[in-house]
Amino acid sequence: MRFDVIIIGGGRAGTEIGAALQKSGINCLIVAEGLSINPSKRTEFAACGGTLLPGDSVVGGGFDGAVLKNVRTENLVGTVLEADFFVLATGKFFSGGLASTMDGIYEPVFGCDVQYEPDREKWVNPDFYADQPFERFGVVTDDYGRVSVNGVTIDNLYAAGEILAGAVDIDGSAALVTTQIMRRK
Image (cartoon, rainbow, N blue to C red; front, side, top):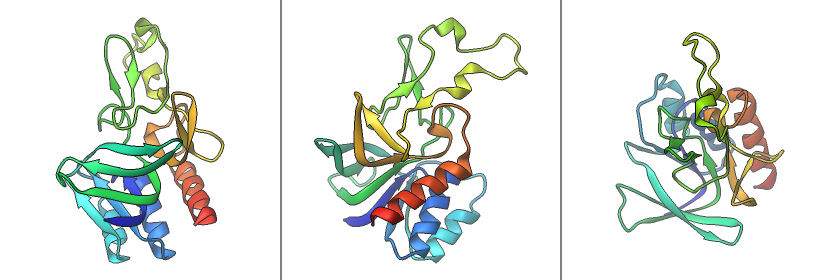
């Protein structure tokens, strides 16, 4: 199956990007593993003709150098999903966008580079109500919103929303990625 854009994650950032692109005539697929707190953007996306795979998750992809060519999902066994552009909007820890081990923090779908504090003792603030350092951990992107894997920028794989490192501006990151894809499409 082929799409212009495949968005991995059906939360706020992913559905905002999908709805905006779909309205502009760019054919999008959203792979949305979990539920959405606010399903209105998913409804808007579907009403614009977008394809939604609820309850499914991307389990890997095929790269050709610094270009992501396709992804595979858990439920569509044997089916390869191809696109010109991909967006990673899977959130942080609670939604599975980031995972941790005793050795560090990683992005489980593509192995994107992640910014985090290597000293585990500094991951949390003992004051439960204070800002928590782990909330700022996330995927590293360039100025255009593209991720890197092992230090190599992936030309057509963007990230938006909570998965990003630092203080996250969900609307700003979604707008940046939307603009970049529309400019390149």
